[in-house]
Length: 72
Image (tube, rainbow, N blue to C red; front, top):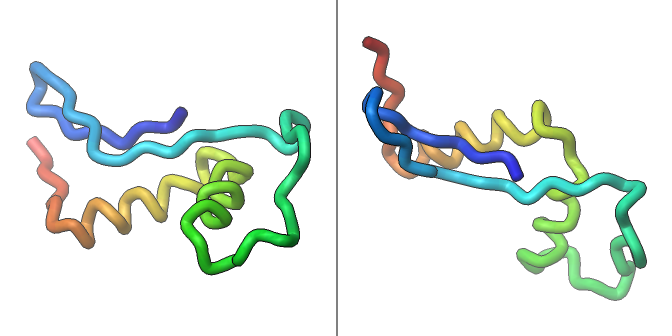
């Protein structure tokens, strides 16, 4: 699991997460019968990405939701 979190220096609040898997761990693979527009297909494809590939999308979702990065 990869988690994007926000911290105030004392506590951490999870903002976004992604469940990661490996291509070796697939039992049945991604079925061609699944409609590619569904969230289930998007989650399967996303789960097979590496953590560095996931980070830009997670940051983009956080920024789109209105969270702003703060530097101290």
